[in-house]
Amino acid sequence: MARTAIISDIHANYHALSAVIEDVRAMHCTDLVCLGDVVGYNAYPFECLSYVRELKCPVVKGNHDEEVVTPSNTRMNSIAQLAMDWTRSRLDESCLQWLSRLQYQCIVRSDAGASFSVVHSSLDHPKAWNYIINASDASNNFLRQFSHICFHGHTHAPKIFVWDGKHAVEDRANIYPLYSEGFTEFQPLPDLKYFINVGSVGQPRDNDPRACYGIYDTDINLVIIKRVEYDVQAAQDAICNAGLPECLAKRLGKGI
Ligand code: ZN
Image (cartoon, rainbow, N blue to C red; front, side, top):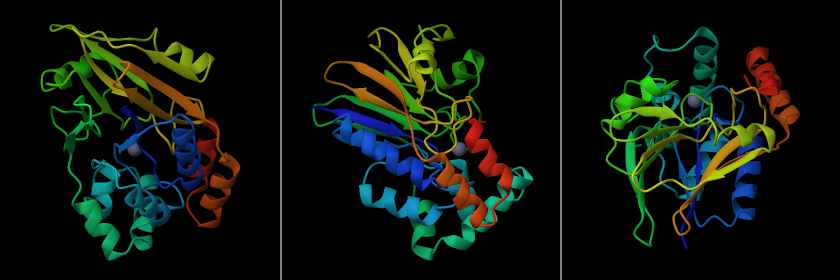
């Protein structure tokens, strides 16, 4: 059996991460992969990083993971930068070393032989941190995607892009149930390619404050994207108590 949970953009939100891992276990997932941005924005960078390290799962690098190790001082807005400086002060040398060694993309293989690719932003220029917002953006990724399915994050909004060999389209029909039911699932067709954004665990930006993650069951060819309730108030309180900008707490409550 191979049922892999795919988590992304934890962003130092320990309350969201622990709720999602509890859900991952309840959903009988056998494996886990993390698509980066473990740190940044929220109040528990050390705790979340330690938790992810203990999980011993494949992890790819996100732009916040890179920025905390190699400050560029140009890429981020002032709030994100402020949180980044605070984050850096919370991490020890071992954490920074671990982050610096993360790959930008990888192929995940199950024991049963199935495989898929993962990247934080997109496969065409993984170090450029492009935001894949629409099908036109996704086209460039598909030209470099040689696997049937690739999972990504970065925008903090779940989406499904499909490639028929010539054109990319956004599959909105299979995302709608996520907003009405908090859950969606579909079976990928063998002759198409899929580029799937699993949303964000720790800072959703699709107007739903609940944590979001994906599951890929290669035995029954099923992709699931689902929401998880967590203690948003506790995460907000921790942000304020840490002295981080209040707007970072407010946005968690709105999912923006
Ligand atoms: Zn992120």
